[in-house]
Amino acid sequence: MIKWLGRNWGLKFISLVLAAGLWYYAVGEESIEVTRVIPVKIQMSDQKMLVSEISARAVQVTFSAPRSLIVNLASRDIQAVHRIGPEIKTAGEYSFRLEPAEIRVPDFQIRVLKIIPEAVTVKLDEVVVQKLEIQPDFVGEPAIGYKLLNEEVRVNPNALLVQGPKGVLEAMKAVKTEPIDLVGRIRSFNRTVRVKLPPTLKPLSEALVDVLIPLREEFNEKEFRDVTVRVLNMPDISNIFEVTPEKISFTLKGSKRLLEKLSPEDLLAYVDLSGLKKGTYDLPLHVVLPEEVSLKDKQPMIIKTVINSQKK
Image 1: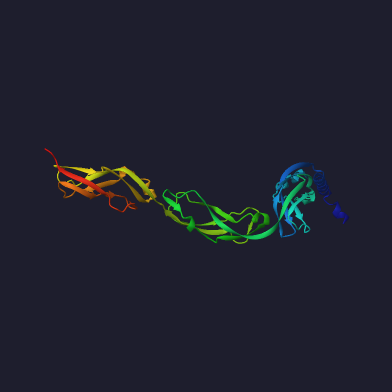
Image 2: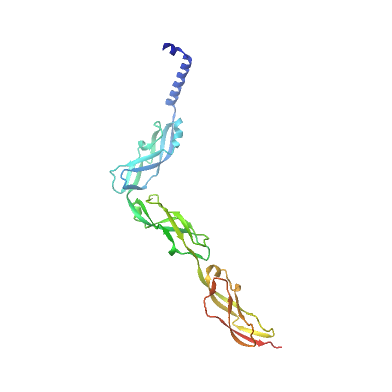
């Protein structure tokens, strides 16, 4: 045994010196102060109560730690955790002081020196379950000439069971979906979207809904004034003619999209003199119209037409 201790004594001495130096460095390493902002987490003993409001969701904490452990203070696991005991059973405000022991740190050598703010106030409320109607959140407008048929919108499911603070849910009757974009749309379509809930509310089922969005082309009426009455198919160039009135006004109905594009100059209104000779006639007015547009008045418009022989 003694012989073994005497072997390689120089190497053993160097190892002892290195070990002592490492221990001295670890124990005597300089500590520095670092300030971090960390989140505050509240744990409730009574599951029928919850936190509806909190005065500080994060606190500023000053730590003292060996230089080698400073990098650990960037960990997301560092947080302040306060547990509210089962003795708190009624809704209302509750204030508490955060203690250093409630700051979770990754190493025992890290010490808490200061917490700002020292006191945190929470508002506790009773947990209730309530059924809320789901309303689609439409943004933008369909293409010109098209409209959303609100009365025919279908949401499946049309309601959602939600758990949350009694004070919050009592003031709510409905929740909205994520935005559904209507800009430029011309056809009906379906969307599966998520229901938007405040952070204090928790859905008790899948918060996804199917929405049927019905769109339809709009129909409108538009009056056109002073449309020139033209004459077609004059039988004999030796005759002269006169039409009364020379200009006419009428109302068209049909696709709003098409009506907005039309002007009086785009319309052809005429009387046909085919086969007519000298005389006075009451002729129906013909109006050439694009598809999906028609005259509002179904009665034919009569144009008085006089044909005379041309004087030599």
